[in-house]
Length: 440
Image (cartoon, rainbow, N blue to C red; front, side, top):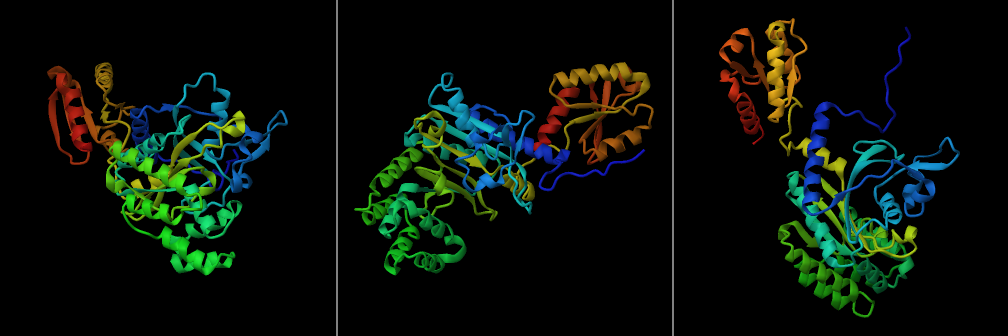
């Protein structure tokens, strides 16, 4: 018989059981955070009409997986979760109650060049509020973002906050028209890589004078409390229509403080310009400094996107957690205690006690214990225990004829080798207690 060569496409991955357990744990924690804040889950098709996906993707359009389906329709795989959200809100507008708070966790596809940490199929994790122009919605997005990162023990994360219109005012201060403002954004975004002198040279190279370039740099590199930074920004941007952005940031700061977001978890950062083209108002980015891993989430207000489908603008704000990056960091630095296996216990089998052990297995499952009942009943106990150990199952339960007669079970810790007899009536309680101790 001819054999097939086992292979997968570049940029795509299999996930082992260990990897899936970690991914499921992180997803579970994010889901709990979202739902405790009142967000509801939605899902959308992996494939959309190309006319849905194009128009707001910018550079991503050339990275889309697009093809003709069997009906000769031009379709594509979704490249993010936000554009499908805009289509979803438009199609379901009569059923949605605004403000609409939704979260969506799922895979997306981009035909990028595969490299370390970058794949063609990857997961995103978004939470958005549709239908509220209040800065309270933006403040809640920041609060949810901080809670989500803390839930996976990324407690050193700091959310940097800026405003697109404030950066546009900076451009006007430098004599740059609004339609050329992205030139300023791109230069400022490189501050962390090339430093102030490098940014100044880049600004000058695109036609901005030395003095305006220095004014821009002075403002975006200022340090201070939120009030100090916003006071100075308001003073310097007087006359270039930056006041509205400063006022919105003041409201945002007040709401963040009212929501009780820990002060060390956020800051005003007037140099934040990443992804600013996409947003229409406040923009945020979560940075993890310790361990030093950089950006793990982006967020902001995008009031214009849904209007492209609906024909009228609907305010919207939200965030996207860098799910794959977070998984990588949590795994690399062992930030979460995850299960070593799905089964909590391996139930050693004997032909003579199959009916009894099957009954006990059902009872344990009813009590919330994950039980793997042995399929190796004709093998020696030692072989069965070795099998369970190779699968990283933490506990084994041995119930032979002698144990059945005495209504006891032998519970063995497969890591330490310790074992003890337990009354069958206490077996479930004993196993659950052992599992709690292991994960605490």
